[in-house]
Picture 1 (cartoon, rainbow, N blue to C red):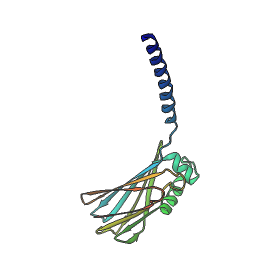
Picture 2: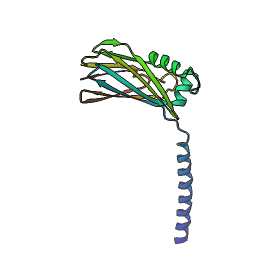
Picture 3: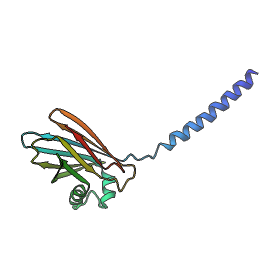
Length: 164
C-alpha cells in the first residue's frame, strides 16, 4: 500500500515537473514593448524637456532604418514629431528635437517645448510604436514644480491629460 502510494507520488511529481517546464518555456521568447518618457519643467527657461527611452530594435523596425546609419537620427526626429503632441493649458506646443543617442539596446531621444510659463493642464498624445507593436505601452512621468504625475498610453488610449 505504501509502495503504491510512493509510486503514484513519484508519477505525480514527474508529470508536474514536465508541466512546469512547459509553462516556463512559454515565457522564454516574450518581447516586452514599452517606451518611457521623462518630462521635466525647467522654471528658469520656461521649458518642458522630454527624454524618451525606447528599444533600439523596435524603433529601427518602425522607421525601417538601421540605427548604425547616418540617416537614423533624422528619421527618429521625423517619427517623434509625427507621433508625440503636447498641449499646455489647451494650446498645442511645438516640439523641438534636440538629439538622440543609440546606446546598445536603447535609443535615447531628447526634445523640448519652450514658452511654458505655467501649467494647469498638460495633455499629451503619444502614439510612439503603437502602430508597429499592438501590445506597446508608453509611460510618461512628469515632474512639475514639485508635483509628480504619470501617464500611460496604449492602443485605444493614445491621449492622456493631467491637471496641476
